[in-house]
Amino acid sequence: MIPANVLIAGAGPAGLAMALCLAQNGVPVRIIDKLPTPRRGQKGPGIQPRTLELYKSLGVLDDILKRARFPQSVSHYKLPGGKEVEREYVMVQWTDPTPDRPYPNLLMFGQDRHEEVLRTHLERHGVKVEMGTKVLDFTQDESKVHVRIAKDDSADVEEATYDFLIGADGGHSTVRKVLGLEFAGESREAERVVGDIVVKAPGLAHDRSHVWGDIKSKIVMLRPCEAPDDDKVTLLLMGGGLDYEKIASSADEFVKVFYEISGRTDIQFGEAVWLSVFKPNIRMVQQFGVGRVFLAGDAAHTHSPTGGQGMNSSVQDSANLAWKLALVHKGLAPHSLLETYIAERLPVITEMLSRTTSLLNRTHRTLRPGEKLEDGLQRGGALNMLGIHYRWSPIVKDERRADAAEDERSSAYVGANGVCAGDRAPDAPVDGNVTRLFDTFRVTRHVAFVFSTDSTPADEVTSFVATLPDGLCEVAAVSPPGAASGTQTKAAYTLRDSEGEACKAYEVTSYPIIVVVRPDGVIGAIVKSAEGVQQYFENLLC
Image (cartoon, rainbow, N blue to C red; front, side, top):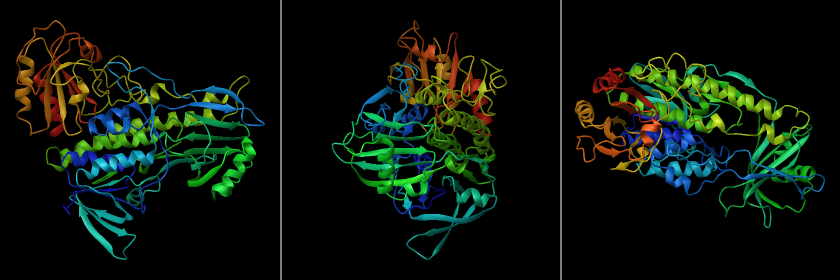
C-alpha cells in the first residue's frame, strides 16, 4: 500500500468526491468508513444541476446520466378506497437546456448507486474504501495529524500519521467531536418514517410517485426507484398519533399502518431494505476546520431534506477544498489558502440552512383555505444551486466589476448584476480542439479563457502560465464572432466562438477579456491582461 498523505473519514458522497478529486490531483489518499458494508437504500437521491456540472469535470457524469432520471410526477389518491387518482402534480418543472446551462434539471439517483459510481471511479485510481474502519481520536501539531484507527475485525488499534485529516463522517462526526466544535442549532419534532421497501408484482405504476392521505392528519408516499428493473420504493410516512419507533421496527409494522392510511391492501410488500425514524436536525459549525483537520458535508452541517440541498452541498464542500488542499500538499500554496475554504463555504451553508428550513416550515404548516399539499412542495429556482457564488472571497479578482464583492453579501445563492468573479463558470458551444467550454474544465487545474480578436493577449497569458508549476493552468484562446480565422497562438486550446454563445455567457463586449476558471468550476478572475492573471495567481500561491 502506498503511504497516504490525507486520511478521509467517511465514504458517503462528500468523502468519495473528496478522495476522487485528490486522487486525480496526484495526492495519495486513504478513505475509511465505520460501516461494515456500503450503504443500502436511496436516502438522498436528488442531484442538483450544479453538482452535475462538477461531476462533468470529475469525469463521472456520463455514468450518472445513463442511470439517473428526472423526478416523476405525483399521483395523489382519493380516500377512502385509495385507487382513484384525485389529482396529479409535479414538484419540479422541467427546464430546457441552454448553451450556458446544459444540465439544468434535478435528477434522481439513489445514493447507493451514486456512491457505487464514485467508488468505481476511485478504484480506477488505486484507492479502495476500507469498510468497518473508524477514527477513534487524534492529535495534531504544526506539520502532522496523529490518528488512532480501529477496525471491526481486529482488537488492535492502528496509529498512523497524516498531513491532513478530513472529517466527512456524518452528523454524528467523531472528527468534529474530537475537534471540540459546537454543532449549534435545533432538532425539530417533525418526525417521519423513511426507508426503502420491496413492492411485489403487479405493484404500482413505476413512472410516478404515489401519495395517500393529508399532511394535516396522516400521509404516506411511495416513490419508485429510478431503475426500471428495480422493485424497491422509497417510503415516507408521517402524521399525528403515530408510534414512529414501532412502525420503523419492521416491514410488517410499516405495512400495517400503510394499509390503514391508504386502504390499498391489494399492494403486497416484501423485504424492507432499511427503515428509520428521521427527525430534522438543523445544525452547523461556525468553523469548518482547525489546523490540519477539516470537516465536509454532514459533519459540518445538517438540515431538513426539503429542497435536496444537503448531499449536493456536501459534494460542493469537497470540490472547494480538494484543489486547495492539493496545492498546499504539493508545496505550491501556503497553508493560509485553506482558510478560504471556510471563508467561501460558510456563507453558502448558512443560507442553505435558512432556505431548507423555510421549505420545511412551508411543507409542515397548516394549509390555507384553497391551498393544496403540492403548493408547499414546489422546488426549483435557486435550489438548482447554479447561482451559488463566492464574490466576497479574498482569492477572486474582478477588474470588470470591482464592486462585486461589496454588493453581493445579501445572498450567496443568487448573484445579481451580471457575471462576476466568484460566480459559477457557464458553458458554451465552440469550434476548435473541443466543442464545449466545459470540455476544458478539470478538477486538477485552472483554465484561462482569453477572449480576443488577435493572438497577442493569448500568447502573453501563455508565456506567463509557462512560468507557473507544470499543470497548474491551461490557456484557451477564444476568438469572437467576426474575428479573423486561422489565427495561430501558443495556447493549449484554440477556440472559435462562431455563434457568439461564449461571449454572451461571459458577457464579453470588449477585448481582451481573460476569464480564469478554477478547478471547482468557479470563476477565479475576470481581468484585462496577462498582468491581471499574474496578480490572481500571486494572490493564490504566495
